[in-house]
Image (cartoon, rainbow, N blue to C red; front, side):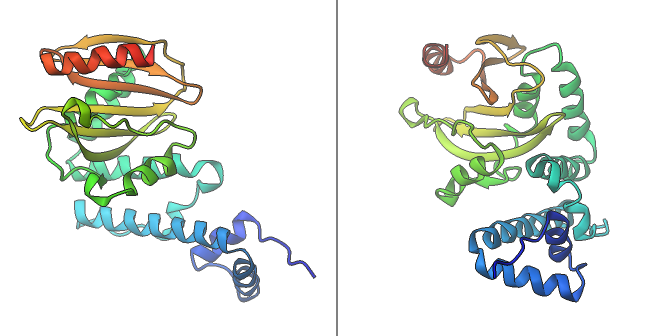
Amino acid sequence: MKRQQPDEAELHAWLDGQADADTTQRVVRWLAEHPATAAELEGWRQDARQLRLAIHQHQPTLETPPPALFRQRLRRQRQWKMATAFALVLTLSLGGWSGWQLKDAQLAGRHLPMEDAVQAFRIFGRDGGASLDVTAGQGGELAAWVRRYFINGSLPPNLEQFGFRLLGARLTATNNGPAALVMYQDPQGMRVAWYIRPIQPVRLPHGERRASDLMAQYWSDNHYNYALVTPAASEKANGLRNVFRQTTS
């Protein structure tokens, strides 16, 4: 006899340790017969554990939120909830300053294309590797990390032929879902960044604009908006921008 699949509420209750004995037994048996779903649920569990650890590391005086808080909105959009939680950690860990800057950037970004990408670069692009959620030294994990949050999105480009080594990535949040800043650096310490965010509220045509000492190039596919953020005055970065103008237009 085929077992009935537990619904999402039962799965979340089981993950949070709030399911009754009958539900727990039924979920365990069903997962034993469906290893792919079991692996996905374990990924959810690991994400929640990492978030609790991040909050402890950045704000030790905070009480750890119960696991249920991490999964209240997983039914609607798991990636958005995770990014929102990381944005909360960001606001707390940096004393609110950079968190509010990102919020201001989102408001300004309604008028300036990819202003959130520019501000994310200003906040994280000059802060060493301490602020990165995943580093290039973790092998293929960075590509898997991008796929986890940006289904059907493009992967970060390989810029080694232009002299820029991949450093890692930082997860941020927008009003429409998660975003990510992927950092690169050349041997002289100059940094550039590739940025991905949801295509809402508007799909951007190919374009570029200068933002003080930075240049932001932007484009879209059918699912996401992208940007390349580079130092505006750099000749080396200008060569990189020319390549992106040709390949993304």
